[in-house]
Length: 468
Ligand code: ADP
Ligand code: GLC
Image (cartoon, rainbow, N blue to C red):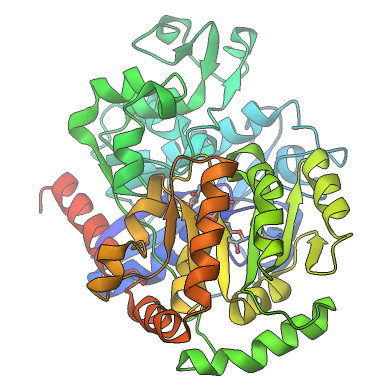
């Protein structure tokens, strides 16, 4: 058994804003059969605290960044959780990172520094009876853990891994916060966590961790370039030797289509149309399940949409995010073949993926992306931008891909409205050839999207760090 402490700010099914939660929630189960005992350290938001049955206090800290805190151990939904109960930091209603008005909590740096601090304490031997051999940290919210471990527990023999799910979120804080984040001014350097005059907690993790991973091989390459590295590409190039990309998987137990063959989709498509009040149509029913942000390129979809609708296609979108995008999509519903649901709705997300013909992911950048993987598994063909994990998971219906009989979806490049419009032409063309479409659906449904390979890759990484 290898003992791993996974540190994350969200974890399905307890608290989720995006794919990080799915991945953090799935990793323990994916790795258990390989002899990995993973415990997950998570902030005690109200929703998380409410889900704990028989919590058992395993660690106490009378002064954790401004108030008393404790760590409680509990099993929930098959997860072996360590929950950081610190009411002064986490007992706030709503989304994990934002005030009710949508702004970030001003003390987010401290809230997540506290998570890293406790993670380092546990990794440093602070928990009686359970000493992790690996500290595996996800995104900026956990990124101070490897730094604190090195600074405050230098003798701990624990391998550290920093996983980047999205480099756009860098955990920036003004330099005035050095003392309140318990950071040493001596490390406010280019080699340390300084980033253009600010503190970057993500950078602290990137320079301190033994290994760095990200969530697809293509994104690992992209991160080394100025276009995708968002100012941290130099830091990553310097650490290229310890950086690797391990593709996310899908929890096949959670994402299990209620049909075995593509024809089984028909009744779900009918149910979806009925639910959303969409008429019958000749073209493909395209679905989107997404955060509505610049990253996701959905403004390009708005520009290219007429090309889909003109060819008899339909759009059903579920998402929430930037107010301008929400308004623009609301306006798009003036067309009878467009249905838009603003909000977060797991049941509707599932119905969209079950009933859609194609799922659209026109992202400007996409570290991995999960909805195209759900699409593959459900025979809902992914139409994706050629970037990041979307490159690694979809096989384009190019003439060669079709001839070889291996295509599982469509890719377009560059990420522009023009290229997306042309991809809609191709999509509608394929859809009008039921034999070709069916073949692609079969390929897609057979494409491996589970955790097997990636779990083995993480295990190999852990083995390398523990010297096994
Ligand atoms: P990201 O993490 O960048 O948002 P991913 O594709 O990795 O993108 O993961 C997004 C996850 O969040 C998926 O599980 C997706 O189904 C889910 N999701 C996104 N928006 C919604 C929504 N409005 N309602 C329900 N689920 C959503
Ligand atoms: C991030 C990325 C997404 C990835 C997810 C889980 O939110 O935007 O591409 O799938 O993390 O790793």
